[in-house]
Image 1: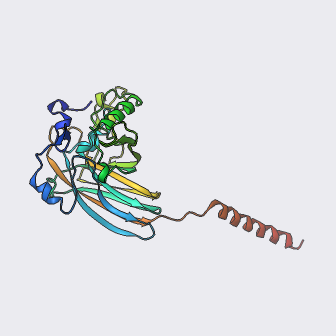
Image 2: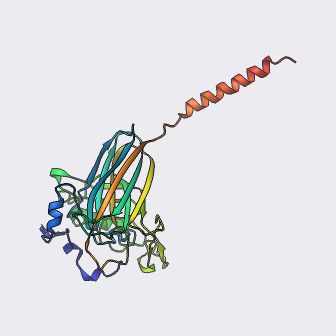
Amino acid sequence: MTISKAQSNPRHRFGAAAGSGFDRKIPLALLLGAISSTPATAHIIPVNFGTFDGASAVAPISLNSGVVGNYGWADGADADWADTHKLAAFAFTLTGRANVLLQFDKKANAFGINGMVPGFSLYLGSPHSGAVGSDHDYSVGSELLRVADCAATPGCTATEGSFRSLTSWNITNDPDPGAASPSRFEYIGSAYDGSQTLPAANSPLADGNAYPIPGGDGLQDGSVSKLFSNLAPGSYTVFVGGAVYTSQANNANRGVLGSFSLTPAAVPVPGAVWLFGSALALFGAAKKRKARPL
């Protein structure tokens, strides 16, 4: 349950699939800006930072995108989840282990005005893409997944979308009406700008108490970052949205700048090598004691 949702039907929000077509009220600036980057769109289409082997440092790579409203990420922390159409997606792939620093900043750009209060979550996994069609909350398969996942989640009675800020979740596309091959996003971690508390009625714990959303940086300044250490090889997706839960009546488009940088992960010493080295040291010490004259 969220705030002021009676004001609009989620199927007819900006960028959402509305029956058989898309909402055509897309600002011209969005279309022009798509030449260089991809904004939040009707379906999940990430902006891609690239593929990295983790062997050498990567200086910050920055890409623009945009979101609808200023609450999409925070909405995904509550009891009835959130609509992915209120978030932007970024992606990267690692072929070796690495430390990854992600940062998101408010920015006036071709995709929206300034003033975003960003929150983001990192997941292992990637959406469907290309000829098979992109994922969205209102495909037949996604709605089946939402019903099943909600039934398996304590306190969940209904959902507004597929997105969940603080845990793993599933979604699929139109060619998968039976949800036989969904996209799975495995939660890695999250962070957001400032601090937010959900009203008791909206708490994901359904315990009658207000719920402080974890992971806030405590200072609402339009910027948030988090270091993810020793990430394993794989394809990752980052979902970014507004972190102001109470601003759900304002659906103005807002710009966001996403930045990615990388440093090589420390190579751990294998346990067997460590044990062998320790054994040699002990053996050497024992020999010295034995050779010492009485």
